[in-house]
Length: 137
Image (cartoon, rainbow, N blue to C red):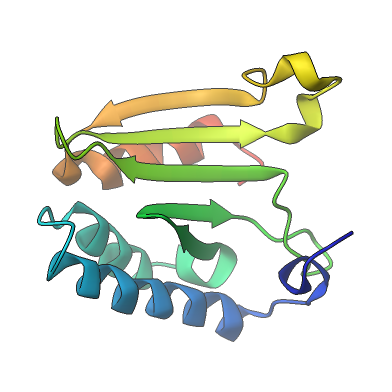
């Protein structure tokens, strides 16, 4: 069964809007839970680039989730870049998962094909490194 997001066709304006919505969410979190501005600085940078018209942004429990729509405009949650902050170390963890690699339940860690830890100021450079590594994005 697919969610509404997975069946909806996303155009460039809708993708950009997803980033604007996440900026609002993470700015609110900066006022309460997340005192590091890595997320908001990263999202503001993305909004100044074409990536905001090509990639979908969502969040879940203080994590930023980035997916690339399929050529038909539908979202592909099988391939997602997750960015999360470790509140103890203040390091960000970036993990790209490709769930198309899963063959059975025992392969839970198999879909993580790219990983990086960094401080907030390095998110942009590491995102560019990820984009250069994953040529399909």
